[in-house]
Length: 458
Length: 176
Figure 1 (cartoon, rainbow over the protein chains, first blue to last red):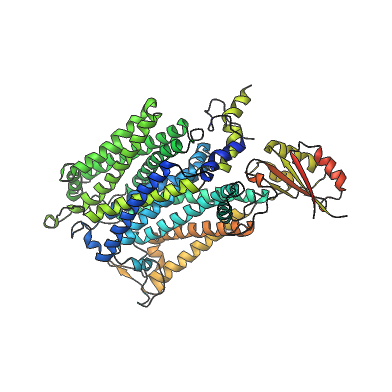
Figure 2 (cartoon, one colour; figure 1 turned 180 degrees about the vertical axis):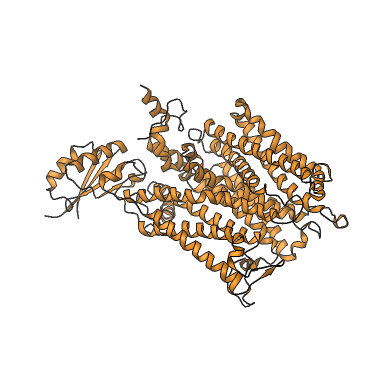
């Protein structure tokens, strides 16, 4: 059996038994919805409905209702897309990469992080899809036989690669998440007494019975999916970065983009996981499973990825000058001193300077500070995408074509709307789905549970 | 005499492992084990073979690679050779670097989904399928071993005596 050093802090606090784990995770699903949940989902639904209204208006009148103009042809839409995709990176990183590295602390957080990933990628997809204008023709991005030739999509284009990357990432993350959920749904099915719930969870659990052979297959499939999802995590944001890096716009045309985007994505993804988990552990009383050690580990990931992002910012700044290309050099001078310099400095403060505070153990183990930081990082990462996209294209080669960008009511409404839809989906998940991978947690109880570890000492 | 099926319940994974080891050593065949989580070390004892799902996944991924090579060649070279920015697609190999992202993604897509579908079909776990675990507690904190007289050429009394010698939590015996 796996033996864990006693020096390591236990991952499951308190004197829990297998039955207690089931109880702690399933009872919030069985009981009536708490008042806070009802208030939260009402607010989220109102914001989501507002978003749906704004999107309907956009489809009705066209994307001219965004603040785009002939110079700035991409702005909030692609900023929001990259922001959401970035947030969607932590879930699969936690479940796949940390599984390969045998990081057992991931078991307390992987389920909700993966749910976050799936919802975030759905929100990301909203932006490019609606940017097409005529959304009902979104299927034109797929190579389907048609009556125009056939006219096939261009496989040389980074935008086309993105269609494949995002859809593969989304669908693989979804099945990875669901495969893990099946045994947990079976636990709920066998426990609840209300007939509708029994029916609901028995459909969701696919008739899982927990046979030995099924568990062997389960472990194998989790490992193989983790193995193939790991390069997927890295490829998705690399390909997103190639949407920019393969173009000739100064400020975009850099080879540093793929690694820099991937670490930025993990950085913002972990920040969003912190935001959601810190609220969830408190309201759903999961402090025994998601405790300071988990929060600290995630904060360490935030320092590492935040520092990589910081180094990347400075590298591209230096290279722009060192390259001797005046357009490239100007793009960066314009970033930190031009009309949008405020967004550049906001990005620098939020992403580079503030995460460095996590070097202090006192701060990275402080829950309130972590929560505030997670919000700051998410704001900073939104500005990073805004800086890259808007400041690069608003002043490119030809000064006569320079322009300004002003976000319209529809730009802002759509962004806020997707936040509403995201939280609605996440709150529904937190209410009806097992928020922790309860059956996986049972496998670490004897090696990392507090009472068992203490017993081993004697 | 009717065949009998024994559902032997244990309340701990270690007890289950010890019992399985003891019974198998006496030549008893354990037909099935139902547990709330994977019990490591159980498979070799009760004779569960290693799954070949990973090999299947590799095959599906290779199919994906082949299909994406064929697709990019047909769409971009054979059916309509595009000339984009003065860079025509006369041969597939010249443009292959640009197709790598799609080839990679499509291979992963096929490898992952092919494996998941195979897994669900082989397990028989599909939407709407009925569950057949003998006791609802096996998805919570109990472990059940299924042993039948049909598999073991010993009398029901003998079998029961051997089972009772292990650290049993609950035992149910049914005809089938």
